[in-house]
Image (tube, rainbow, N blue to C red):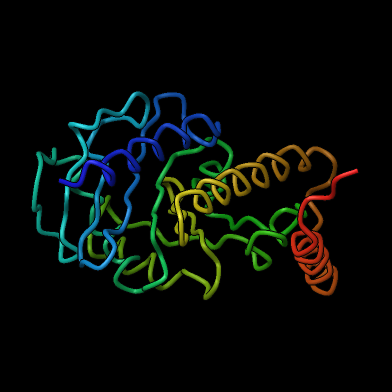
Length: 222
């Protein structure tokens, strides 16, 4: 296996854990597309915490294990990763976690709305949809994920399971995972005050435009 890609997978797993958007036991998985090949590198460890390089495997996008040892419980979710790479050619990284607040919405089978400004700024103006429940990694589960995804929205909740985030790079996938978890936490906290209120569509666009304008200006120095 390519040592650089293995290192990227392990580093991504570590950064997901450091982001805090993960359950206490660290369950989840990370994959990275192999550039120029119909393959991905995938975390086959039981937890993303302290994930070992030796537990990274190489898998074809047809689901064939090409290199490494893949335990059955991890192998069961390979298909939801490969489906995203197959359907979305721009996706370079997939992250699956059971981050607590977002998973609460998944368990309640309720979508997360655009009630936090960061959702509008980072590609989630339509919120995060919920894919209907299917047994872990089953054809039904994968079909439900494909059906639930909103074009341009890099995240989906998995009913009674967890969260799936996918983006061009690991950095963006980790960022979006954190934004989703933050929005879910805010929504749950706001429930005690009458419930979260979504940002109006025109102001969602304005928030994104303002962020893009400041990004284009770059760093300002005195």
